[in-house]
Image (cartoon, rainbow, N blue to C red; front, side, top):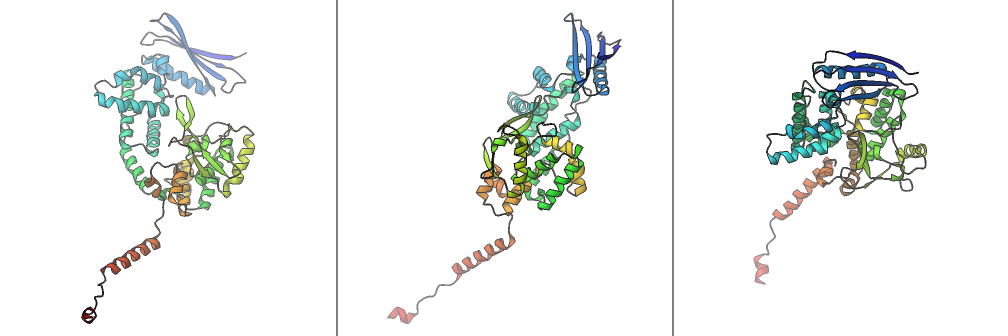
Amino acid sequence: MAATSSASVEAIPIGVRLKTDVEYRPNRPSPYRARVRWWDSEKKARKSLSAAMGSEDEAQEWLAGLVEAAEAGITPTLATMPLSDYGNANMELALRGLELKTRDPYLAGWKLRVVPALGHLPVRMITNGAVDRTVQNWIADEQSRSTVKNTIAVLVRVMEQAVRDNVIKINPARVTGWQRLYRQAEDELRNPRALALPDWGALIQLADALVAASHGEFQGWGSVVLFAACTAARIGEVSGCRVGDVDTANWIWTVRRQTTPAPGGLVDKGTKGKRARQVPIIEEIRPLVAQRILAAGPDPDARLFTGPRGGRISTAVLRDATHWDDVVNKLGYEHLRRHDLRHTGLTWFADAGVPVHVLRKIAGHGSLTTTQRYLHPDVRQITAAGAALTAHLGMLRAPRTLPSPIAVAR
């Protein structure tokens, strides 16, 4: 029989009496069901809300948050409402006073960036840290400065409305320093080579250290890191790779999709450039890829790389599971991010002499200028080019030999 503990909350200022209980249901992944019930005096109906938790402490903490919200006059439904639902319901209030020409970019930022990144989270669970990391991801994805600015602005307005509604006490979206981060990202994009790991040994050392730092020393994290660096791919693209995307006859990976955050979790969508591209799989990682294909089974739609429980991977999942920040600090790569594995691969391809037009196809860059930033300027070649131009100009400046007067007379 399921065990149940319960408690009642009295004297709620808005006249709502909450009754809470935690029920233990064995043989379930999240065996503790936390439930809150109350009487809606406006609709003359009894309502309830429940959530499954992994431990009793988590269940009690969830209930305590709803009790605290009720004491502030917030119903459990509003206290647990996802940001996407709250923003859509209150957008007109949040954007009041804005000119029409400003509303469009704000609404685009909300739909295309805020909702996919944060929309699945309850408003009360959105923290300064979550907003900071999200803004950094927008910057890392090379969104323009005005796009980031407009996206932050609409998030700030929605969260400010939540403050006015007493859903939250402080607006967590009022981030500072993002302009500095953007300038830093621009500097890095001008010289992406500076972000690359120096050599193969450094990559192996990083992969091994991340595996050692992960729970259960999951070898799959090392495989993801090696594959991402050697194919110059984004982590989301690695997560989106399926068995059928890999041609083992020619050892070519056709990049067709990427895994990105969306309301309710991670989803697969097209690549950033909206076009499929082909990437070579070098000999060093072919045994790794063959092993992953064998483990995935015959289904061509099976994912080549997954987490330890078979879930989809994101850059945040990789960071948290491997304690990335601590590991790279210990190795002396304090500023190394997951996206820098892509910078590493492109830099190595460029140093190997891959022609720039081919490198552009491998990278999936829309602009050749972006690809050219990975090319290493060989000092000797530049010096030789200058000497050749000097010699050429010297020949043009040399006085022409005129015929002698005697020769003219003849």
